[in-house]
Amino acid sequence: MEIVHIYTRRRSDFGRPCYFSDRPAEVCVDIQPDPSLAEAFMLRCPVDTPVQHGSEMSEHEVNTERVEVETRGVNHVEGGWPKDINPQEMEQTARFRKKVEKEENYVNTIVHLGTLMEHCVRQNNAIDIYEEYFGEEEEAEMEDEAPSAKTINVIRDPNITKRTAAHLSWHPDRCKKLAVAYSCLEFQQSTEDMSLDSYIWDLENPNKPQLVLKPSSPLVSLEYNPKDAHILVGGCYNGQLAYWDTRKGGLPVEVSTVEASHRDPVYGAIWLQSKTGTECFSASTDGQVLWWDIRKLSEPTETLVLDITRQGLLENALGAITLEFEPTMPTKFMVGTEQGIVITCNRKAKTPPEKIAGTYSGHHGPVYALTRNPLYPKIFLTVGDWTARIWSEEAKESSIMWTKYHLSYLTAGCWSTVRPAVFFTTKMDGTLDVWDFLFKQNDPSLSLKICDEPLSSLRLQDNGCIVGCGSKLGTVTLLEISSGLCTLQRNEKNLANAMFERETKREKILEARHREMRLKERARSEGQDAEAEEILEESPQEALDRAQKEFFEVIEAELQRRARAEARHLDGKVKKRAGEEAVVQGEESELPKYEEESEEKDAAKE
Image (cartoon, rainbow, N blue to C red; front, side, top):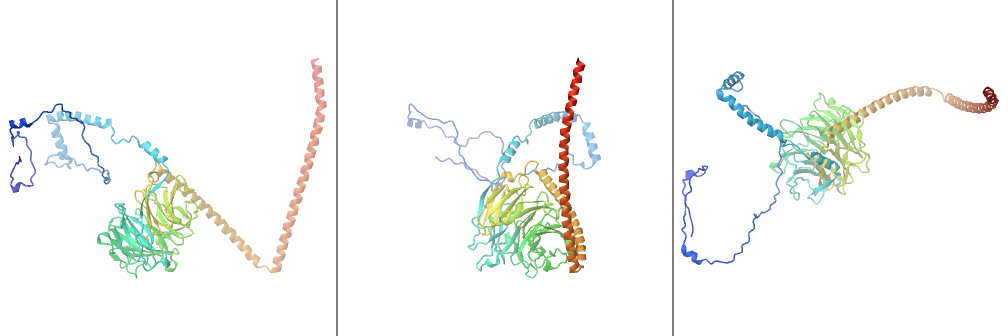
């Protein structure tokens, strides 16, 4: 038997919300019992029926995205006022309060609400729901943990002819994407069939690039726009600058003209902090720094020649290898050069010579990495030749701290975004070093052998936990750093600041001492130069006679010194012998005197 209940509804009522109400039960279908069916049943005796008193459960797992919770304030506006009263007018609110306070129900209502409010306040004071009970134990466990890192992903160049992973850039909003610039930096080793493409990789699917960037020349640098994550700017090997919009595909939206671009590879391209978010600047080994607006790449908006003699001549300019820009200091930037000199520049200076504010010299080769400390912008790190050096803007002549000289050349470096005294360096032998200068300065806290080929690039995520290392053969290795190296320790900021200030003060004292010694040496050299001029005026015979005279004077002085020494030696021996004789005579004279004294004492006793 099929039971069907049909109800009708007008088409205009579809989509309306349901309104439920209480009503008595209503019988829709009533099936009366059939006595004839009872005869068909057979009784079973006995009947055993097991019963399990428990509900069946099923287990299911799902990998969900982590929910990021942040604290936000609430803009509370005072309410409860009648419509005819403006809460902003003090007179109206005061008059209304006086009127309400005179009512009879006001006191009773306040007393009733007061007891409820007191109960709620007592509940809140009884338990602190935000109290952390085991925070100290977690910190102690974290301190005891040894520094370590584990490989979480490896991304390889999909082309047959491998190229160098020259530059890495993390997606600014979600660190699940990584843009890698691939290029062959050795011109003689490039081949005709070598690919020009660079890629954007999705870390959740690393087997295939998410987007292929197709420049006109291999990319040496590539950087995400921090304000618009869909836009990237890239510096090419032929000196051009291009930008991409990932929503429009892999071809560049616009490329700078060859005539107005750099003459050498663009090793640095950084976005500026501007209202439009379209301004950037680039540096190259041709000795120029150019400012651009990607809305018009036909020509740069501004040009600076890196001539430290401040003459503005391009033939005297130093080639730029790396750029550094701190958003908190929008007018300042720094350039690392091929000659091992770091140039500090001020963009807002009035004349081009004044834009070069100063220089720091301390490396024997090109400065491959130059980054400011994210927590202390006046402290910056440079990597070049066989060392990594920490500098302070207040000490101009030398670095305040440095690592030991390694056996392999250093290629890249960066600060930790979380801990102020931790930084990373890569070497030509494929090793990644993690330094913690607050606890150990002679050796790295963690040294990892990433690959056999040289490492060429290094980039750390903003959370400080994952670091990417690019190699010469295009392999990008992603490592997750242990929590001890990417979690701010207790009182670490104050200790790191004290360390940097102490070393800066020490370096200033040494600079003052060296400056004083140089002044004395200069004065002495000027005096020697005057004597040398007098000597040059002598004839050869006079010079020979003067040399002989000085020679004999030296010999005579030496003979006199030896004679005086021998005389002092003999005199000392004579005095010593005379003293010994005097001591012996004194002992003999004291003996009879002692005997006389003993006789006098015996007579007195009698």
